[in-house]
Length: 285
Image 1: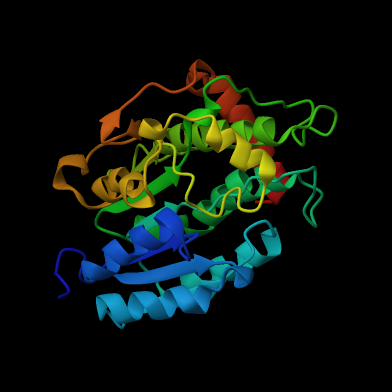
Image 2: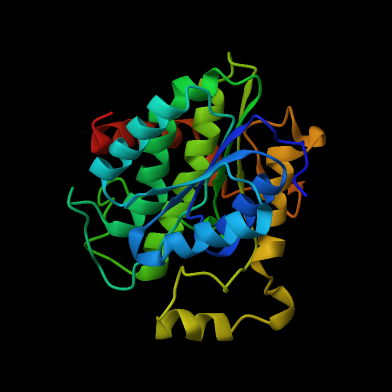
């Protein structure tokens, strides 16, 4: 039975076809929200949509197919959402990728950085006017403790001269945190919007590294007691989005519903501003 907790709210979840994104979307739908599932076409999104419609009995679930690594596709998505939903209440930037082997997008940007950071940066900024119209808007970015020892390589943001899968992923996750903190500062005058980020924990049961022997070998080295399910990984994001307890929390980084400290670099105001300016430049915002 659908509850009334999020009735009338419009919620967007990227990467909603599987894993944590699907669980978050289902939770919102069960709470009565209008849910926009943002998925890639190659990930059988229509199967996920049918599943959620059947399981939640909430007819207000919409699928929007987008390739987040493409800025053109992100702009088309934002335009469609803005026209149809003048008020947006919750935006979960959950979609992510881990590119095994160097590759670039059509804009000439390293794929992991483009998908994990620039897509969230661009989509969020394009939807800000709609979020500002909400009585209490929530923006939540899925980051990772993979960022802990990373840095932003401003001289070679694509990491073309020293590429590794995990280095690119870690840089993109640090960018998620820097973006969260900087956006929270820039929106301080809007007390109806909060921006936070989450380390979900080690959740290997996703499509992040699917099919990669390198990723499988890495996961095999992690003690079993540290590995959690997508359901467990989604809990903190759902709590931040829905709990009265978290309603005024802004510009923080969470794990297991507790605020934690991020990479020291993430607190550097110059680094945050430089990343913001670079992101504006790379997205022609």
